[in-house]
Length: 262
Image (cartoon, rainbow, N blue to C red; front, side, top):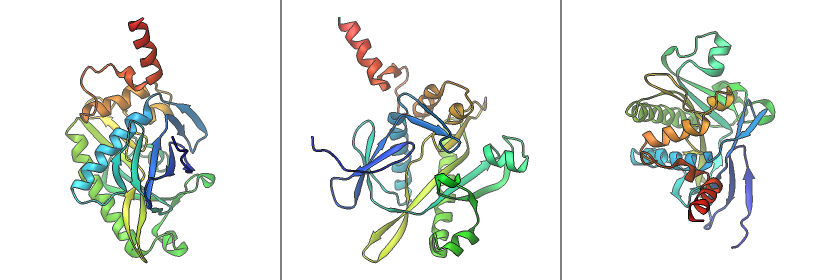
């Protein structure tokens, strides 16, 4: 197999040069990080689950007219996406107070916000992705006013859709992160949704029990991270009921099969 050229390695994904110009292969890792990579670990099978969940959500968003970088899933851990220039802004959409918002403003976690709140953070790991305002974005030219209108409109549309999607399977969408990129066509560019949408970047709580079904289980040492991610995938219809979930941990699955065959 020809050796692929690695373009970038992040905390949860590796990007490789795609087979055609203007494409990228996005590989989902099992690595887990929290608190701006100060805490590191591994969630076995996470990359497989996030690949499937993100594919599912991006496909549904595409069907309602949200432009995305997603082209198709290639295998268990990889998907083919359009190459974009990432806007250096992390968009945080909040429906319920949790995490840093609760800490900073002293609002009890789980409090329903009066309206959906959109926050912007400057994408810079060394600085800890600081919270910024639209004034900062305009001042430093990180995005034009027109691009910010598109980003805000899409973020609200994505939120409305995902709130309904998750409510239908007994999950509250507390908050989530989005990234956007510029897709170029000659000198012209347009804003499209990029990166991923998965339990890594969403807070997802069970509607009845408020049990956390996301990366907060890793952040807060609650345990059961794999089971939580699997539960989200199962409710979305991506894992058959009663599946022997060790198939997601290929090494364990292989050993178990060898033992059964032997």
